[in-house]
Image 1 (cartoon, rainbow, N blue to C red):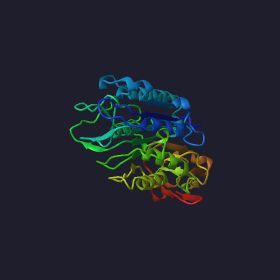
Image 2: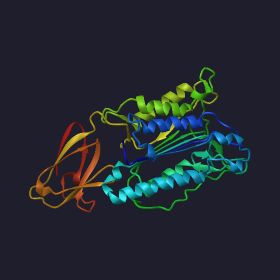
Image 3: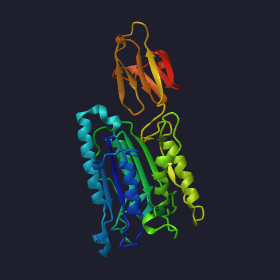
Image 4: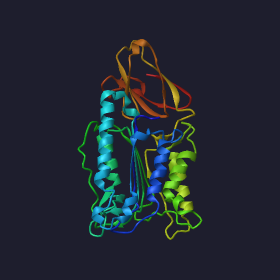
Length: 350
């Protein structure tokens, strides 16, 4: 299991102030099951915080008393943040192994100055309590608690220009200059609805959101990137986009999922079983004994003492730079220390 991975999973079906839904709790449980599957997300079960509408919610008629609410989600994220910061403070080398999943399912809107917000159970006309996903992703990018952030929202993105998006209540923290990789997936395009399965041929307890079903199916069976031997953020996006549009082709507004990520630095799902890049051997100028560092794709530096000889290591495909220790200066090396890692093996002469 991947001890540096954590998840916040939320699904809301009961909305006393608006209209109820059928699938979000089942969606959340489906995604949680993939997360903790040793053949899936490989996230330790105790690292997954599942927050959903409870059976007793059916008796709640006043929106003010409805749950889940934003405070509960923030509390779970606060506990996750604390645990990860403690882990990384004790072993800084583990930061590249950290990943946070945020999964939200329920009613959603596109607020006035936001992109995609989950409506909380206490939402009602005149007070659409919400959790704006992009604000949280941006906070994690700036804060740098996790090396990778993967966020999904299975909810509508219909325009509610009069509604203010929620704010993130956490202070900025430990690694504000870290290069965090992020994948964000929306069930629908800007201003568009998202659907849940309503076909009579599907029993109610088996119905899911079209986006969530495609998402979990894609995690398991999307095309594997040959460079990694695993499903990546790039191949997952390809699968989900096609699957959702095909499944909703007959809807009044066909649903078009959207994802944003850095295609040059894909996020890997599951266990990479094939080639993961190339073996790189870095050779230094004659007589060079000063310590050097390699700038890795996730913002972490690896160091080497050239007096011990050439430096051989395995790297994912991509662009890299060798610099003098503690600097960004590679001007004394060939090509200013820059090189591309491609193929099975690559020699770099600095």
